[in-house]
Amino acid sequence: MAQHYLRTFRPFTLEEVKKSLLVIGDLTGNCAACNALGINAYETKACPECGAVFKYIASRRLESHPSERFRLARRLAEKRPDLILIDYQDYQKAAGDKAARDFFSV
Ligand SMILES: [Zn+2]
Image (cartoon, rainbow, N blue to C red; front, side, top):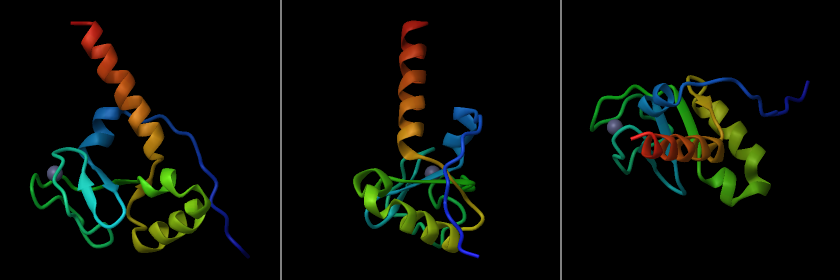
């Protein structure tokens, strides 16, 4: 039977996600924990710079190429079944909200 990709919403702790998040750009990925660049998103299990073991993956292309969204999701699910695909915009928004909260609570 054909499979479809449907987005789900689950609660995450932002700090936990950031420690194990690989963000993919157009060609390579970067580590959300230390911002190391040039990571091969399809093969790298842990960040070569800080050693973070990746558990989550987010793609900038899902935002910039919405028509490719589900093709990209399928490719990532096939290449990285070990990683949980999260929505980059959701992550960015949560990180921005947290930064603002931290700033104003000082
Ligand atoms: Zn890193």
